[in-house]
Structure formats: C-alpha cells, structure tokens
Length: 177
Image (tube, rainbow, N blue to C red):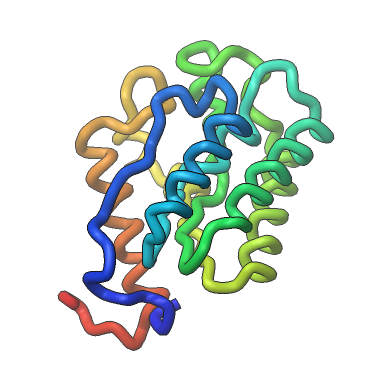
C-alpha cells in the first residue's frame, strides 16, 4: 500500500452520512460517487459495510447479497483502501438495534470471510479488524449505552488503532511522516 500513497496531494475530508443506515445501497452509492470525484489518495471506510450486513428481517442470503452490493460499490473506488471487517454487535439488540438485526455468529463469520477474500482480490486494501477489537473488553467499555456507537473516547481509540493499522501496512514509511 505504501507505494500508492501520495503525501500531501489531497486534504482529508469526511463523506460520512448519518442516514447511511436507512438505505445503504443508495446512500453508499452517492458517497462512493462523491469520494471518486474528490480523487483521494487514501480512503478510510472502516464502517462502510456495517449496514449492508445488519438490518431488520434479513436472512443469510439477503445479508450476503447486500454485502456484495457494498463490495461492488467499494470496488469502484480508486486507490488504497482501509476497510473494516464486521464486528459482533449483537449485544446492541434491544438497545440501538432491534432484535434480529445482527447476523448470527455463523453468518458473521461468512460475511467477514468474504470481505477478506474481496480485499485480497482487489489489492491495495487493508482490513481494519473491528471484529477482534470489539471482542476486547476495553473496546466494549468505549461504547455508548446503546451498545452500538462509540463514546468520544471510543472514537479516538478506534481512530488511533486505525492509524496504527495504516502505519503497519506501510512498512516503508517512517513513523511521524
């Protein structure tokens, strides 16, 4: 990935949308278009795929199909990509998530396997291990009471850990540059 990064060529910008969960395909498509127009040198899409896998009334086949929609959108993005795997957020059911919105452990494993396969095939992609981070007690304590969204401290922690993943994926770059 280090060979693809061009320091200083674009200003960091967020394309996040608070309405992503309502219609991930439509909102995601608009976001991908906007990001592509911006011509970034690095794309950090840590939680982009979350709402393609989580949702009410979805069976395994629907979750897998929706994930493929999300991956197809990401495929169109130019350049290096940091993409998160899917954490187990089933503990948020009955709080921020309705019962049944989270995939089962078996389906979650299949979804994450597909993300890893896709990232290998795409190249120039690094997976941010949200799933393993959320298994750590420390990460769980950094969630709001809804069990889904990070606290301010939790957001900083995820951002710091994500930057460590980026740094570690670019061994030719020196720390601090």
